[in-house]
Length: 112
Length: 115
Image (cartoon, rainbow over all chains, first blue to last red; front, side, top):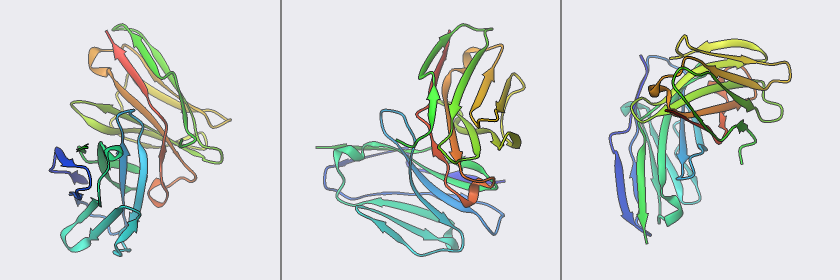
């Protein structure tokens, strides 16, 4: 069975602080895909990144960076120099054959 | 804006009723997925259609059904509604059949409230 665990329910930071969101997954598949989505207060789900199981290179996109470690089944997400607009719920998801299995989400609250 | 549209944005109805949620995928996308987001269950995959055919099924209740039409829009029908069906229903789309090799882009969701 596949499972995604986001152990942090809520993280509160002050603007400009860095914040790291943890994601641990379980799967028996050798080929799989990992995703991060952002859900701002308005409610829509915004795609942030997709990573396949064969690509363990870390990725940076602006203030966002991702650390994929297959050995520990983790796909962590860091927001550097957080801003108020980063306040949202962030979901990690695992995909195998089209069904996205989401974690419970981590609420990030950034205060000025 | 993901390019996926969903109507209506909000829906309020009573227990026992039936509702239809509509989704139009991004231009060029052949797959449509439905998800339910509720406080107690989180985000759950319901069903996938690819080019009009059902491709994958998740935790979809028998009271729920979906279809994808020749113009590729999809409808999710919810019947005999119960209080516990109150949730945010998302539609997502992707280009091909195997969602894992591609990204699923989500619509804004339909918020259903069953009273």
